[in-house]
Image (tube, rainbow, N blue to C red):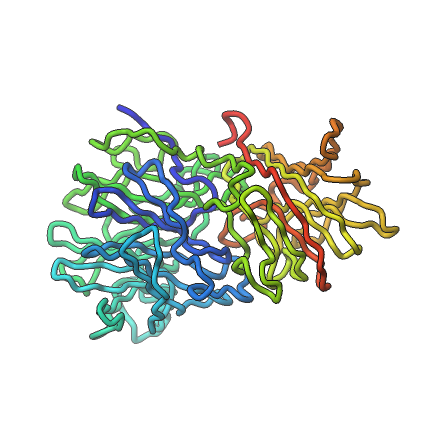
Length: 535
């Protein structure tokens, strides 16, 4: 029996959704929150090795993230295929409020995707289900308006959320018919979300996420003999969770499942989970693959085991082909500034009065200094990639001549706008060149500075899984200066920093509220895991 290692997508790739292509391959999308481009999309032939195709939302006219706060933006997307057309539905969230649900379509999943069609639909986490008769049903989760109403009865009447449904006419992209409340979940007092609907042997199964997306996260299932319900929770709920395995189990926060069948007749689920170190996780929610077996009572996740394993058998009867593995995309070399791995915060690459604040010819990156910084929601000149390993090293060469003390450029490690760390080149009070390392958290800033060498400077950040350490040296100089971030990884971990994203890192530049004509140039960016423990 051959095996693969979980997760199948490392780093910040939350809320996975999967579908099968007519040719037998698979597609997968994940959430992108405040990052642009939005909704990364991957292709696979075996559900294990995933190749990036690009992004579903890659044009400014598709996605306006102006003023979006950290962890708002594009929440859980669902991808489905029907009669040669691919559909992605998702939500644009502002101020943690849903209701901005939309659908985009394409005949080629590599793009281009259509302009969004905005739907008059409450809530978040939309999904589509195409029934045997060709009708398309839109499902989502929303606040339960009858919560704590003495006139509302039934299982879960007091729960804060509910799953609902309405038919969607895909020819006109309009809702038709009545709305139906499907289910309020299996866990009393817990929010129910992430609905996906499937049909098996004449029974409809509604798979949901409950317990919050932290340590109590879980997968639950309800079933019905009719698509519009009523749905009843399975007696085996929750069908998958790691909340009972203890804090030292290597995979935590498991939930938000989407199911897909292979040509060999197997069913597999993609789910999100995290891999904490010392109680904190910085990599974000990653994509794990788990087998599912259908029994008379419904789906059984991880049969015979009951939890997600770091090593799992490969899907049956799918030949193993040479190609990209989950770590092959780890190193970003100097000619890959255009690669899929890079994202910006909130804004496309041409914005804010400067026609092209982020410019690359493939070998060098030029960032025009913008007034916005990493701690706000204004346009930011930054190009970031996901941290995919607990133990890694990243470096870049910076060419920059700051003209005033407000100007800085360097490398950033970002969890959200309230939790990030930077090392940058700037000017000191007397106009001297200085390297400044800053850790920004809810407790304030911790700042360390040192004299900067003349000319181009190599900046680096390395992590051993417990701390981030920033280093610098002049290009061509052997001596390396280390500036340890004393707060360590925990201040950038989700458990302390909050939010729904994982750490990203890369070059940034800012004039800290002032107008500037300065430009910082970066070359030779590399990101690599360190040793076998880097994963």
